[in-house]
Length: 328
Image 1: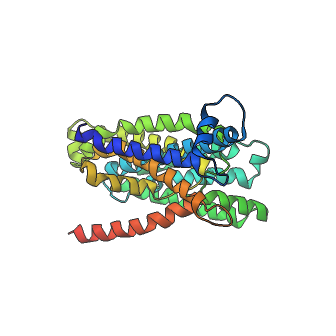
Image 2: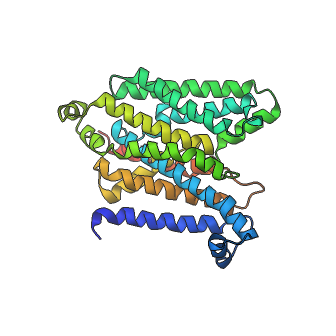
Image 3: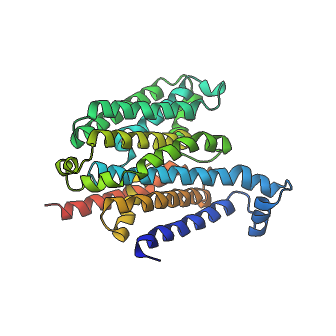
């Protein structure tokens, strides 16, 4: 096997091991033989119900969400030439969160269960469009526009919590913002999958652009890269994939920041070589973190977004310290 494919192959093996762990681990213990029978047997059984209706869709959602965050982070770090860039920097995650919170605030989920993920997706695309409309003109303006949109979405989220119509609504909003994959099923998989696939497809073709931008915006333009067009496509890819992921799983941070940096020492610093492994590693990291939420002994299951933040924050500090040492 060539060195180019060694790291992706290794991360795929990690993903497969994580999927196996996700199917095995839960509040109800299933021995491996019962798990296999539940997957392959056409006969209905308790094990089949747990595996196919609870654990399998949860594992697939974790893979989609993690891959979306990992690939989006890698593309944005190359596109913005900023090692600290991640999906939240453009306001997409905050927009998705606001859209979902609007559905909860006005009680739309009582009449239409899919209102939360659908409005979350609409919020993500609206926030991305707002960022692009104000950020046209260069990398710095795009980053500043993303920060402004994120701040606006955060303020509106705080406003919704401040004026929550009932304690139950405030609790639902807070719980959703913490991020989780529990109680998610095939309905959420079917809703998110088309948008995630289209978004990841758009981002997967960003390799040439991020490689050219590593030389600078002027050099990239001289090589024939249409910067506004490529930024729009990348922002659309991030909006679709991360927006769909956030709309079904809630706010989950740090995966998009951590995955590219973990993979970069093994594949080199050519931005295009980081993309595919970052998507695979992001999927593995989120799936393993979701397994950890089920293993940590707590009265109620630890929220996924809380654990990713607890693990990711120290990495973020270490990254900042390393950049400070290497910067002139």
